[in-house]
Image 1 (tube, helix red, strand yellow):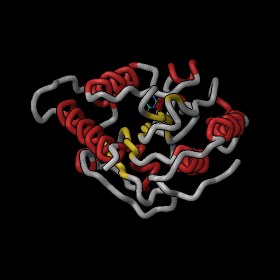
Image 2 (cartoon, helix red, strand yellow):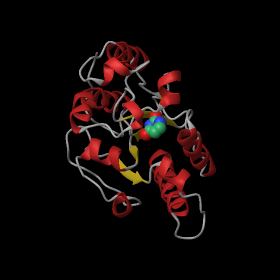
Image 3 (cartoon, protein in one colour):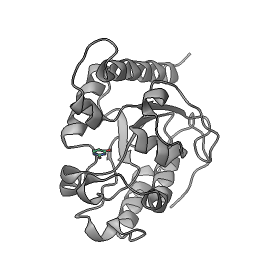
Length: 214
Ligand code: URA
């Protein structure tokens, strides 16, 4: 597999599909942590690897484990509807993946060790897909990618540009996790859903800026 230098404005790898297939095959054989023993399938990604937007969630749930695709259960459906409402189709306009590629039993949060064991796969996805914008769905995605714990209410809606390896130059936007929004269904002004909708509008504006020629 070819690992590319980071340049979010540069073209995607010419042999991207081939490299991502190799990555998926390697993930399928992964036993770096105990989640490998309890999964039905590894859940690597869905969507468009040539899109400028990457969505990163926590980890597969039951539906994802069954279908082998990320964000296809109830929270994924909500995420899709919310993205759609700002003109982003998750399969056409985004590459969707998770911090951990195997389902944690009982949908518990992945441990720090599990996240660390899975991190090289995510790093390779980021290098290959080379997204200009990364949407971090929920506190675990923020913790897994940036090592920042807790406080999604404070972090959400704020653009970040981190210096950590592989992230330089990319725009990062933390949002509430859609499963939290399923439990907090109000759309009233100031509610988590309302705030998320505004965060996603901001993401759409950033994507338009990045992809519109001067
Ligand atoms: N499904 C996923 O793929 N990721 C999540 O974070 C939640 C549900």
